[in-house]
Image 1 (cartoon, one colour):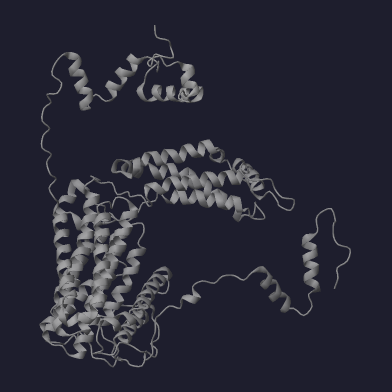
Image 2 (image 1 turned 180 degrees about the horizontal axis):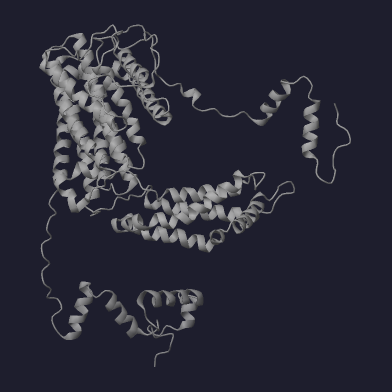
Amino acid sequence: MNTSSGNPFNYSSAMAKNNGLMPNSSSRMALDNLLRRELKVSDPNDAKQIAEALLNRYKNNPRALAINKEAEGVPFLLTSSAPMPLQQAPTSSDAEMQQAIDDVNRDLQELTTNAILKDLASELAGWAMAIRSAMQEGFNSARFALDSHYRDKTFGIRRNLGEYARLSRLVGALSSPVVNINYRNLAQSLDEVTSVLLVMMGEALANVGFNRSRYLLQVPYSELQGRRDSVIYALRNFIGSTQIAYAANEWPRGVDAYRQLYSFLDNQGQNDLRSLLVENELSRVMDSLIHRASQGNVEGLRHLGATAQLDVQRLRRLVLIGKNLQEVMAVNPASPPLDAFLQALQLFIDGFEGSGGFRLLRLARPPILFYGLYGSSANEETSENQLVELAFQRNRLAELLDCWLQCGCTSERLKCQIIFDKILYDVDRAIDFYALGTAENREPEYRSLAYSYLIDVVINHDDNDDNDACLPPDSTDNLVSRIRTTLTNIRNLLYGTVFPPHFDDALDPIPSNEKNIRKLVEQELRIQGDMESHWLDLVQTMAPACLTFGNGNSNGSIFNIMARLIQQALNRALSLEPGNDSNLSLRINTSTLFNTPPQYELSLRAEADASADISEYLETIADSLTVDTGDRPNDIEQ
């Protein structure tokens, strides 16, 4: 007879416990709860219940089906052959993107292997690496344009590729005519990629079936949870539940403001908002909104589009009343914890504001489909139609500009080519602004107004300018006439969205009462001028010095011409007096952008040095340190 120690199948619980293989009671209870929750069994120790629950959970698994067949007494190894998976057919935009990428690769190959450009092989190889990386990132992100992060990323990549296209045209115009066509072919291929990126983003929005819904989240879905947690942390700090003990010289600013806000809401009849000062209720409201977003998919966005503004209205009321409490000085001095809580709550609310981007549907889908399928908003109809027309006029302009230098390669014609290429790049930026604008937020369209004044300066040449006009109105050249007509149409499209349209005469300055529009136009033009000023060293590296680039001493230098063009647009838009443009520079001094305040020791010394007698300041400091108990120093050393 075998003893327990000699039988290998008789493994006692005591032996298992001694060997550390038996879980303790807490681990066993956790495992039992896991089985009850996941398998929906009442007794986790019942093997039959566990087996049935596992078969039911994995009933579509081939191994589970084989076990059932074996129990029925039939051959369980005979399984039906799986159908051949159908390969998903590529969409039209996928094929167009692949063709555009192939064109870019061929053009880069042509440039990097050209014997004439052998001295620039390393620089052109750097172009190739940067361009290919940007194209791949743009292709991957454009397919997920429903997410605001990827949509913003795609617009950034589109702008980056557009800058390479413009730089390629600029370097080509300043290089030998033999290689100019190669540079312009690369720019044309890059334009193809950037155009398809817009179409892919529009198709990403159309493929999810939005129908008439026009709601897009302002921030990525993943960021909403972070903003929610920020509100909860700020609330805990506000009411004092997570604060450490106050020091001997600290005042309870948060608790004092919480008490006053709670009483203020009661006195103002806003008792329903007091429940939002309780963490559980505030968490429930915010979690409900986040859950309704459904990971940012189309159904969740349509749910939010119909309900979000109603639900966040309660939160917005709390922010407005809380800020009003600070403005009327009911909380005096100001409470940093209260302000932090209100700002965190407003940041969460801002995440549910609608975002621009729905106009991309107009570029991606045929107009005939908008009746019934995608709907049409009366508020957006004019801007959407202008976006489509702007894209059409842009392509016509690009085709005409490719023919400009074929009619002659004089220095004046070369300068005009560079100006026209700059205008073409600006029209692309205007298209981006229109695509991101909404009926409620027209600031992107106001920014695009700056480009209408740039075009107006080119069309309506300044009589005081010494240089010849690129597009004289009395020219008999058919190409000049067609370019002038196309630029006039683009100018009228950009200007007519904001102000009454013009036709042949010069644009009027922006009215002085339109301060916001004037500020945006000036900012956009100055940013353009700063960008132009930083391209000088790069162009000097890539192009031969057939023309002077711009050392500030010549009116005919390339970059000085561009600076004068931007300055004249500023003068015309803001009704400024023209100045001396001989040594013009629009580069922004970055040292003046950031003004760090001095340390308090330096501030106090500056105040002390400004006064010969500081005794009165010492008296003021002593009075501010005096408490109600009269603990004032008896005398102060003079």
